[in-house]
Length: 253
Image (cartoon, rainbow, N blue to C red; front, side, top):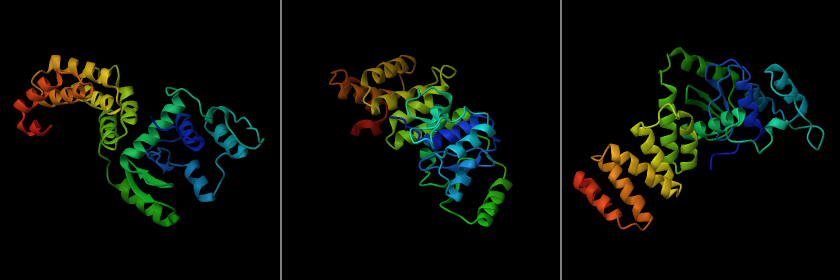
């Protein structure tokens, strides 16, 4: 399943959606993705040891970025209604928070705080301000590589699948639809993630659709054969044999 963000992750995501300055510089929480705000209230809170659930702290963030006002929890001192669990995966703040976690996992964010610029980890753990500033300057001095968002998303999704997180992979791929429906790379990665998540019937349907358009693709033949084998379908041997005939490297499969 895609990760479920805690309050601090939703706070950071809501801050960005609410209009925080964006230059892809920020502080990530544990397994969190790269933030994009030049001034990070979230990161500053880490350094000041601020309680991220403190009602006054959350009021200040909500006021600054025009977010929904905080609602006191049962203790009367903490909580934001929209930061509580239970929001739909498609809710804008929820999706931004979950994607931050997934992109962070894909680039290898190890702990909190982790400092990231343009999907590159530049520092991990507490750092002296002067050293951080120097690292920021050195990293920002070089022009960033221009990577289209859809390419960045595909790369991260593929990495998540390699890390055995097929649900996270599928979650990152979802916004590419319907604009990129039918693109072989997207559909193949989707089929792989479906199979890896044990959604065998949807994976089979996706692979059969792909092979109808690309019957000479040995890798697709291999994927379909392996999927059918898991389903105990006798057609599996046919597709595995076709894959091996097209590419001898697949003989061992």
